[in-house]
Image (cartoon, rainbow, N blue to C red):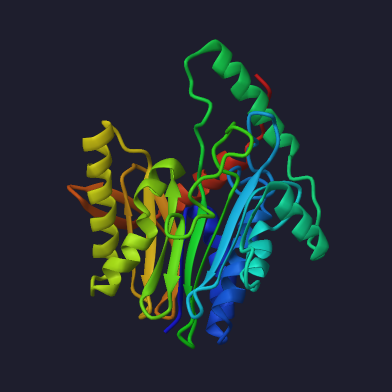
Length: 318
């Protein structure tokens, strides 16, 4: 059995590419890296990679991570600027015996020495988003931070190896140097080839409070199906945050076990994800939470067409 699952519709083309590799017996590390890179390279996805939305100083700072479920090796970068594919840098760091999580200038120096591609990641389209948001904040009570869709993935290859990876530009107009859950092991991602893996998207500051990705893997290790594990972890922590703090931020988690079974849970409306397995062609699902149970429906062609139309529509400055 092989399979790959990812947060959000934006991962679909990457999932398609990875499924082709996995079908031919490809490695879970290679497949997941290529799948994430497809998202990072597409300029119309404004929360990951090239075209990602900038921080409050109009700089694009990127976070990414990679984990090997066979060895438990982890590599991650945070607040890195001007490099094209942070997930590839993270994977390279996972090969190091130490210094596996690098931030800011340190991450950039490592990437430069290793020959990774330098690239100005701030697009004209992202500048328009930034300038429009500045004007909206000045005119209304709109919050600056709206928009934080991480791409997170879990992959299983036909040899039983599992991997997980994440990539994001983080909160729109975040403070310089802010780091969310995405490059933090156990929070934004976790994978163990003996069990399975999970990955998160949402408000990193809240996901980190519960190490939700690790919790899902722990529940799967106890014998839970990925769907049950996702629902239990998300529901319990959502409830915990509301009891202690009066509110809970967005949390959406995807998971896959070492049998290729998958699960998804969310505490928001409108969450989408993409999945492909040996038994299921690449597909996009929409998820809604109904009384604590998450119901998945295949996205209609109308929804898919509208998704791309809205994201690629021309922008005008306000």
